[in-house]
Length: 380
Image (cartoon, one colour):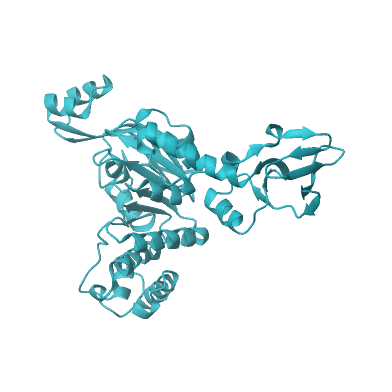
């Protein structure tokens, strides 16, 4: 079930007029609309469903419309045309037609936002910052303390509860922002480049922490990023935008292996292959190996014996039997590499319990070479 659904959403800033939308419907660009009407196109005809409990990452170059789209979800940007449906109390609320009281309720109870520059109150303690939204709701102080202590423990900041926020590092301050968002118990979290101002090592650690928290909290998260490797690491769904328009939306594998156009191909050209390649891409299907009676001939003297039903039974090297090692079809390349570092045997690949292919060490190297060739072929 979708927690947030955009249906042909347009966002126009400034002097939006009938002519602005007519030009938009004619397929005119942002610059053409601006030149003729003075209106600035933020989002154009965006249709997207974000499922409950998933992380959707909005990506694109600066000015692509990703933050403009995100800010529609909590009403910071007004929907000019279309529908933006938020699941709420067993039904849906349309942000394009929402009343002031409904908007206040959603911001208070249903949607929380984590900002790039933390947005903390420097004169307050860490605990007071985390409990700020609860205090606004009028929740009793004893309950606020219980909730804030629980959320601070969740982000490993219990020992810093009574410190002022300016005594904390940037990474710790960002964790305070996360704890404050979690404290509201909001089901939908909006995160606008929350880690981009941090050092790479701190950013990587916070990404890991967010994924670990998501395992237990299962929030619906819409996350804006300009870092593709971050998007591939975090996102169940990745959305590529350009000029206010959604160019492609799908899983990491859809984006990498089935790019919608040349813009997306160039956008993903220089990614770390460890973050996108997986066992199903690395392997060679069983049918590609030479079969001699009841054996498949692999590389470097390795063979696989097949039983009467044609299923893999044993692994041999120069006549000596060895244990079988297998990984699932969907296992990421970095995990395959870690296994192969300590194991010189061919690795079986399984799907739905059946052996469907084999990864030999040279298959990993060949996949890296193919990725490098793809990148070098990209136009600049």
